[in-house]
Image (cartoon, rainbow, N blue to C red; front, side, top):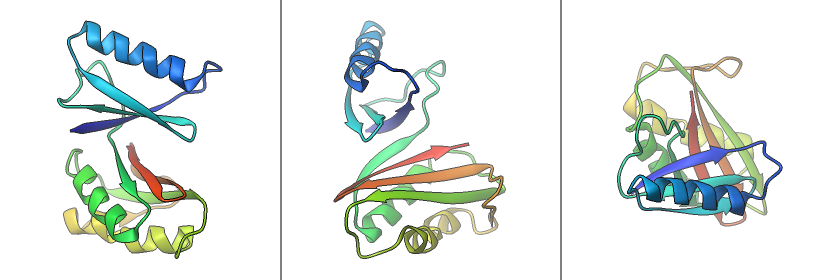
Length: 143
């Protein structure tokens, strides 16, 4: 399965936006489903999307640190190597870790794939975003 994130500033409901995307993909003979997660739409398909659909890659996970780590490794394999990265964590709910601690601990997933990459918190070429709500997380890439 392929996952993608849709970020929107629209005042429309996320359900209406998700429904429109699903219908337009269906017209292109692409079967997909979506879930809303906070203020984001997580889209899943069995196949990659056409190049004109430039949605960032994403993946859903539990809020467990080991699961987030392994999902980042999977997600990173879908993109080209860059020179610098940062991890941004937002979370709601009670967890055994802090946002900063989690970011530091899961950064190894990026280093596992690209040992020479540098951390740049000010202007990274790649941003790994982890949004956690209670026991679920949404992980996606911005570059």
